[in-house]
Length: 182
Image (cartoon, rainbow, N blue to C red; front, side):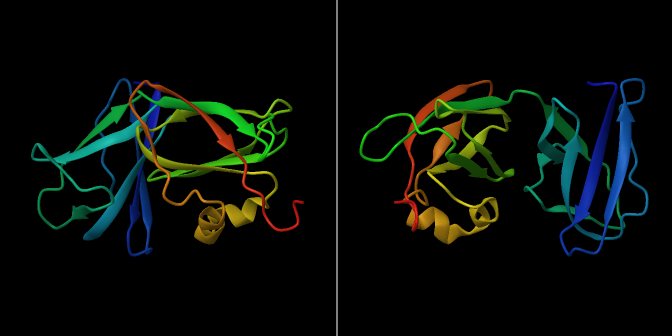
């Protein structure tokens, strides 16, 4: 466990967020002021993520930690067994590496994107194990990456790659051309 760890409870109804801090010396914590409702739980530490939340030894569905007026003791299982996703973005038609394209990785833990280097290479480090969609574009505005239609137009909406704990996933992608690229 790192020297400190912040745990954040975010209300699913958007009405509030509460946090708590645990340390190596005192790994238990209390998040005072949580009102009854359903919460998402996140951990903020450089090398860890929330792998599971348990109540009475049973896993709580993701994003549905129910807080009631009863006993709200939970066990939060943290892990640092991230994977990596890396590869090369290639130019449509020629197959040559495409410098400065944009690649995005989208899964349950959110959306990450980056511009590839001069050789078309990319690396997503500390990827939480799970299933992800990945897509590359020769040119796209960053704010457009959130739009599911951009993924469908690029032919990436149904492509899923699994990332296992402590795994390296290498993938070569052909960048999608969007209007105005040609």
